[in-house]
Length: 79
Image (cartoon, rainbow, N blue to C red; front, side):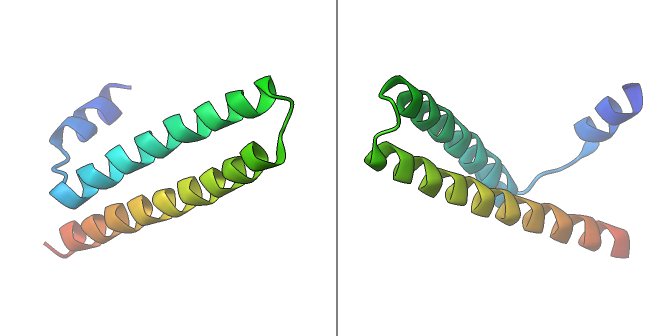
């Protein structure tokens, strides 16, 4: 635990990486909200489709974030 905490505190994130993290967090909140609304209203087609679109957006945002993080680790490894 101490090693990961120390490592994460020394990690310098770029503006793009921070924005990607905020994007992922926003899409998670959207996906959770759509999921709860879908269950509350007994899975209407519109909410079900929006929930699926939200899943695609979350998947895309996570891939984008992983791409940005991987690019940073490659750059740091070359130093």
